[in-house]
Length: 212
Image 1 (cartoon, rainbow, N blue to C red):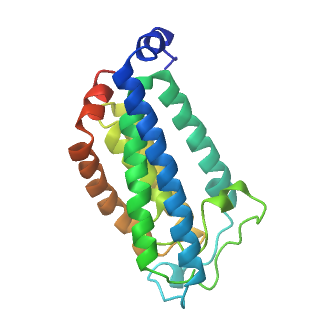
Image 2 (image 1 turned 60 degrees about the vertical axis):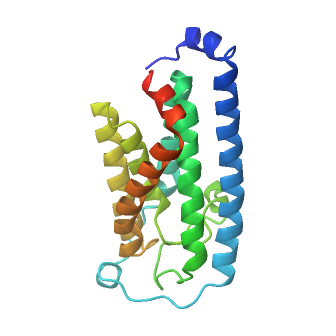
């Protein structure tokens, strides 16, 4: 999938596209700010950990290279496929922003502490700006790739790839004890609902996405 620069010439002179793109970018920035506030609040208000059907019966596995560097690779790939077809950006960014805001609301409601024995991440890692420790419900590592699988559902290869990434991340956060089981399994159901909310509210952006 190579960038279609002819499309750029068209869309950079399309007022409706530019409004849609910059509004989606602004929406995402606002969502990230809300996520930061919610994550900080959840961490400050954190309570006691609880038992878990999987975490209580497994040891901690050192999978930080997947959790950290796998995340970097995932977002680099996402940026690449987004640049390749710019008309996909508005709907995708708005869907991710909606996901982020809804997740921020959930983590503001639930303040369970991390499982007692869990993988300790490098404190200097850039990923710590987006994870706070108390922001557990529901798993973003599981949900975001699944959301992209739903968005790119018509592309068989993209669909299976994003579903595979979602499952790999789900297994990683469970074996690393970075998320509770309910955080991971609920992510699939909540994300499915978020996707359909995005379809309802961002119909014009979805039509633009489908042009590709």
